[in-house]
Image (tube, rainbow over all chains, first blue to last red; front, side, top):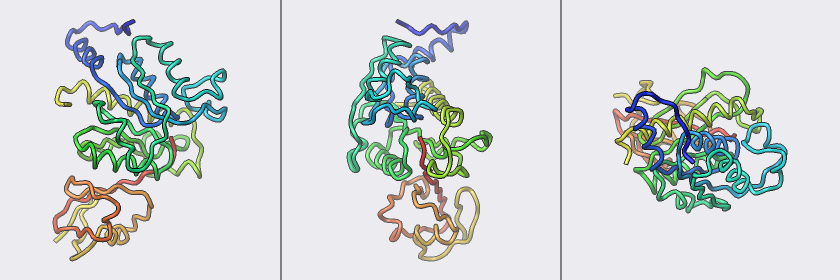
Length: 205
Length: 66
C-alpha cells in the first residue's frame, strides 16, 4: 500500500517520492522513538530500523504510541503492529536489543539518518558521542529537554555540523518534572520534521 | 584575545582546558557535548584539551527524558 498524499505540484510529489528510498534508524522506542516512527511511516518512509529492549508498561500510555491491549508486549513488536496498521509496506527492521557502551552505533551503520530517542541523559550523551566518533558523516537528530508542561516557545533546533539537537535548554530532567504527551510528541514530531527536511534535501548522501 | 562560547564572546585564557572553561562559565551540567571549531571533543579528554585563541566553542547539555 502506498500512503496517499494529495498534492498538486509535481515538484513536491517528487520530493516526497525521495523518502521511499531512504532508511532512518531510531535508537529507542519510548515517548520519542515510537512517535517519530509513526510520523515517518505516515509520511511515506518505507524503511525503518528501531532498536529497543523494553516492554510496554501501563505508565507509558501517557505519551508513547502504544495501546492498553499491548501492555506487557515487547515495544518493538507492539510498534511494528501499529505501523503495519498504518502502512503495511513499511519494512520494519526492529531489533529487541539493549545498546551497550562502545557498540551503540553499530545497528545504525547502514541507515541514512539516525534519530536519538533515548531516555537518560547519560545514555543520550554516550550515544551521540559514539555516532559523532564512529559515523561522522551521518546526520543525527537528537532531543534534550522533553519533560514539563508549557514553554513550547523555548524549543529550538541547535545545529552543530551533522548534529541537529531539538533543545529546550531550560527544561528540568524527567527525575524532577513530568513527562506528558504534548511536549514529548512535540519534540518527536519536531525530530521527524527535521528528518524529512534532510531527506528532501538532495545533498544528503 | 577572545573566544566564542555558544555564540557569546568571552576572554581567552591561556592554557585553559575544556574542563577549566566549563568551570569558568559555570556550566555545571554533568552531561555535555562539546565542539571546538566544529570538531567534537570526547569527554575523556576534557582535562587535557587546551582551547586555542579565537576558538568557536559550542556546548550543549543532555537532559533526561524521552
